[in-house]
Amino acid sequence: MRILLTGAAGFLGSHLAERFLRDGHEVIGLDNFVTGSRENASLLSKHPGFRLIEHDISKSCYFDDPIDGVLHFASPASPVDYLELPIQTLKVGSLGTHNALGIALAKNARFLLASTSEVYGDPLVHPQPETYWGNVNTVGFRGVYDEAKRFAEAMTMAYHRHHAVDTRIVRIFNTYGPRMRPGDGRVVSNFIVQALRGDPLTIYGDGSQTRSFCYVDDEVDGIYRLFQSNRVEPTNIGNPNEFTILELADVVLEETGSGAPIESLPLPADDPKVRRPDISIARSVLGWDPRVDLREGIRRTIPYFREALGRSNAKARTL
Ligand code: UDP
Image (cartoon, rainbow, N blue to C red; front, side):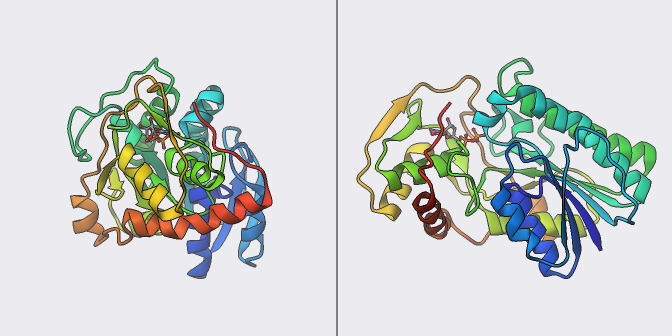
């Protein structure tokens, strides 16, 4: 297959591109490098089956080659990024999704949308099944990401129903691992970078809010299976083991052996109090289950950040 992957130089995009390349497929990677990294792109460029096109998918583009699959992963995904890039975030989720679906329609290609657990907002149902419609503040700062992805899901289903495009929607829950930028701003990269540098670990609020963290290899395996399945409805892919942010800080301090202190910062507006995927559907339809627990995943991630910090003076980024 020839795959068009938007956001190929990003954290998840680059891992997913590698997965397709490893299985003998060709990948055309699109990225505008707003949050994607040149390092990821040059890693991928070593594969003969990879081609990079520097382009913003919010603007239309045309391809001469046949394309069998379009996967739309381009978007800022860290709250720190979408606070800084609100318009780009709205555009890549709306116009970008429209353009990517247009390519899938023109090429008769399968389409997969990278959606998010953020469509559930600050959830009133716990854990979150795919049937839950969510609790989102449309006008809050997170609304630019949440509503863009909700629009993207609606657009994807419209192309499926109206144009018969063969579509998939993955709702991705908090994912971490090697290749996150040290300054990404999300909690796992922040805590590991802070612990390794000896900077205080910045806990927003009292740290009792929860998240369920999925190691990147598990996440990519679930997405890959979903792409190959025939399930059109949105599908949660995430690790259902739930931790408070304070528990995460403890695991990071233990695994890095760091004596860094803890610093309290205000809780950002609309920060979801709890989050945990119901993955019954992924289990039964895809035969997928995450394998890497949090401690093991953190152990696998630390050497990457140690190396990255050895090469640059990068710091964590806070809201
Ligand atoms: N968080 C924190 N310190 C940080 C970064 C994040 O306490 O330096 C908290 C944040 O308030 C949220 C959780 O960690 O409750 C996950 O935040 P992240 O930005 O990773 O992703 P989110 O799930 O909120 O999109």
